[in-house]
Length: 121
Image 1 (tube, one colour):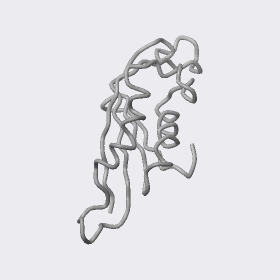
Image 2 (image 1 turned 180 degrees about the vertical axis):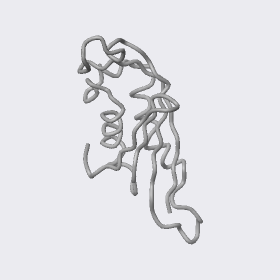
Image 3 (image 1 turned 90 degrees about the vertical axis):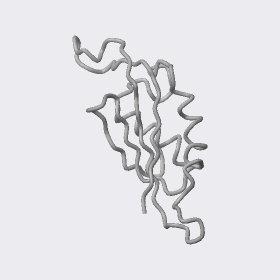
Image 4 (image 1 turned 120 degrees about the horizontal axis):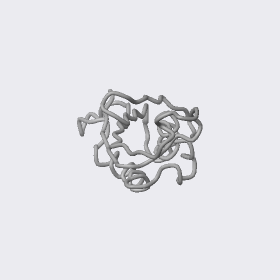
């Protein structure tokens, strides 16, 4: 069984490695959304895979590291594409969240990526 919880944050960034003149090379911001998906067996007694509060307890400190910051200034996010951000989030969340299956990052309502991670960042 899989469960998920959605999170969001506001942040600015620019992509330093895109070709000259690319619109994403300019400083801009997004209302980011990301989904943390966890899989595991349903506990027979509790009737759930995991308390959603347990997911929030692990993820909320990570959200505070990102919300209303300039992503390029955060270690590991010097080139903060959605793909790099998803992998960075995985590296922060994986150690504390059993059963983590994927992280989906959306920088707009129609654009994003889904990372099915490994055991490290």
